Length: 105
Image (cartoon, rainbow, N blue to C red; front, top):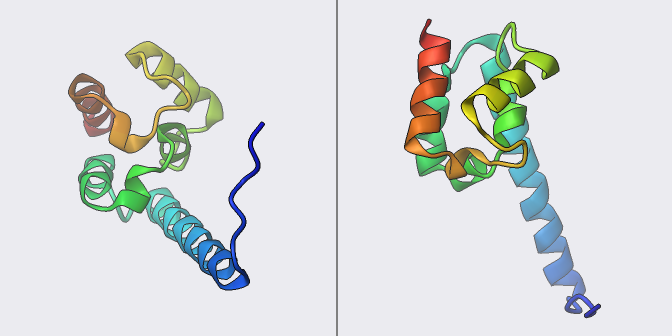
């Protein structure tokens, strides 16, 4: 197994700050979903423009929706045919339209 590249302390600090910022953005997005400030359709539009949101797991986004828990989220993903490891930016058009239709109803 190859060794990871050695980073200078400044590079390591910059990488840690970048990762923390990405986690913060995703957590804030999930909180806005949970409070109902953002619809799932708006989330998908945001995922297209914001790379940090686009890299959020679809399962985590679904679990953050009001009245959707872990069991319902996994069931919905299984019915639509979305792998649990799929990220928002990796969803296909058919998968996106089925999710938007589900939350529109």
